Image (spheres, rainbow, N blue to C red):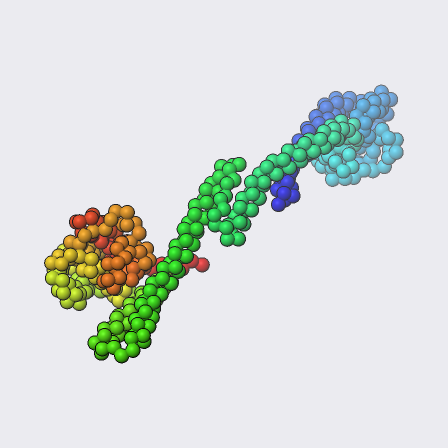
Length: 469
């Protein structure tokens, strides 16, 4: 990781400088060559004027012009050739090709009145060809002047400057390497610490804290990880507590059954009525055990996913009336009045069986934990998006400090009374899970001595969950 980051930083830091240097060097070289060509063109123009007037291109020898050509060639560090209209070299400052013929694309272009110039960086050579025009009578091209100049003298100072730059670049790269190494080390060190702290949590130490605050980013990651660890720890504690509660709840009826059975076996000959009483108690404990198991299985199925929902359009008004009709006999045993108030017809997309179970749990609790001769009021309402079920009772209410726990599994406000009424402590958990599967929400409002109100809000149209890829 360190090597890769260092390489990236060096590439992003040094490459632009090198590219810029190369571009500037070539641009400067081209500019110098251009200046040299302009200077040579000016001198060549004056030379051509002399050659035209002296008849040099018609073969008339002129020692003065020969000397001027030689001097110009020496000044330009170049070779100059004068070519007539018949492509024959009249004068070669190098004294090698005089009397020979010279034909090239540049010469042909010059004979047609065109100008050519070319810079060959590989050969370190500058070539330009200028036509010589005679204006006596009709204007015509009488020949051409060809200049091949050596550009080493132009390139040498530029190359020296380039080498000097490279020499200076070495300590710059060394300093950059050290600074980048320090920077990357200081950047990666908190990440390594962060990885080590997260590794402790992954090994099962959920009490470990991530405390890496070197940078704003690592501080945010630390805070997020600490929140996640706290949540995981709370979930783990909840799981352990749940397992403990399940073991306790399942063990209690079994313990009662064992005590009753041992008592029966130790009685010898006991009255039939006593046997019947003990067997009735044993049957009640078995029923209680069976109800706990059934509720646990219901919770397990609800926790899996919403894939098991059987969604269909249902008349909620008729459904509520049917639930209250079934629970009326239970309410009548304690002279509790069941009231139903419907504000408008409601048709919604729900799972009939599961929603019936959720509402039944709420109404049953309102009856069980109510006072004799009390009342339970159920109301149904809806707007354009949701329908609302409200269950209100005249019971003793729920303490304020217990409101945030009543949906927890096996939580009981009054444990003794819950067991006396046959409660398992799972009903409200099941109800909340069912409401959540319908993408709804449930809220509770209560005051001691004034009763309790549960409000369920569920969408009229079921929202399909998109499967994550």
